[in-house]
Each structure stands twice: as structure tokens, then as C-alpha cells.
Length: 294
Image (cartoon, rainbow, N blue to C red):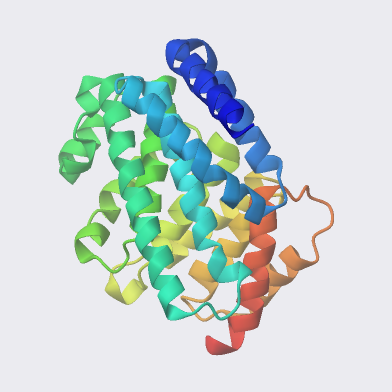
């Protein structure tokens, strides 16, 4: 029976490899739908590594396939986020587990960012080495874009933000925030509804990572969080959770923090797929630890 399962697995992988262009988009779209509609983060977290390895195999078979590279980026970033959710799902994680999670997330996000860079370079040569381009030159590059450019730039922007979020202890990484904000600002200006308004959420986080005294712009971050909530008609509970975590705590606004957490925990009108389920768990964690901040 074990040998039979192995043979079936090899056949499936060979089908993907030999007919990648026919199946990869459908497969990854269906997988993404299955992931986002689930309300069981632990099961999804246990399942994702197998799919990440599968896509690694597909990338190895055709390293120049942009769709496969971007699908791999999405899965690795999703898995890294789920690993990070353990801080909210499990109380009092021991330090050694936290260190292990942080190390694994950094590895995943670095790999995802490298693949996103490669994919965007394959897509259009002028975007090669985008992360190394100086601010002013990047601004010039982003002046003339079309809708397809925006879609793929959003992919690398989200991978870049995810990488920043796990490297806040590295000032060389933090020095890249200006370029990421420039890129995400351009995306929002072109289409603020992209990804259900989540570009605003990323900008909310980016502007609230650093206090105003050190050059951050938390009040601008607040505007972006509120825009994301408005665009989703209040259905994006993660926008509210991150608003509380990054902005309300940074500026010590206890009343806003309590209001946002309460909105999430009493929500009954919105569908609780994976992201909203994680937002609820984050809200519970924010509620438990509020006394440490206020």
C-alpha cells in the first residue's frame, strides 16, 4: 500500500511537471481558495509544507516559470504567517520555540522574496534588481505602469513587507521601508481595491512599525487602516486586529484598542475564513496582553 501511494505521488508530480502551463494556475487558485475559506489554522499549517515542497519540485523542473515561482511565494508567505500566528494561538510559548519559529520564518520569507524578485525579472527586464534600486530611481521607474505591472508589483511588495516584518531587528532591512512604501503607495494610487483593500493594511503596518519620534508616520498608518476597513465594509477583521496591534499600541490609545478588539470578538455578521479566524485569535491575544501596554 505504501509503495502504491508513492507511485501515485510520483505520477501526480510528473503530470504537474510535464503539463505545468495547463494545471498550475488552476491548482494554485483552487488551493488558495481552500486555504482562505478554512477556519482551521492548525490543519492548514500542517498541510502546507507538503505543497511547498511540491512547488519547490516544480520550480526545480522549470526555474523560469513565473506562475510557479509566484505560487511558491504565496504559499511560503502564507505558511510563515501561520507560524507567526502561534504567538496568538498558544499562550506562553517557551523561548526556544519562539526562537525556532522566528528562524524558520526568516528562512521562508527570504526564500519567498528571492523567488518574487526572480519572477518579476522574468516578467519584465526593467524590474530586475528592483530591491537594490535607489529611492529616486525607483520613483522614476514606477511612473509608467499598466494594470499587469501593478498586479505583479503587488506580489513582490507583499513578499517584501512580509520579509520586513520578520526582520525588524535588522536596521539594514528597516532602511528599505521607504522603498517598500513608495512601491505600495504607487499600487494604492493605481488601484486601492486590490486584494480587498489589503494594500492599505500593509501601508498601515509600514507606517506604524516605527514611532513618530524615530521617523515613523503612525497617523498616516491610521488613515490606511481605516481605508482598508472601509473598503471591506468592515469585513476585514485582520485590518482591525493589526490596527490595534501596530497603531493603537504604538500611540498608547487604549480606548481605540479596546474598541477594535471588541468589534472583532463580537463579530457575527462576517464569514470567518482563515484570515478572520486568525484575526479573532489575535484579538484574544491582544485582549490578554493589553495590561502590559496600557
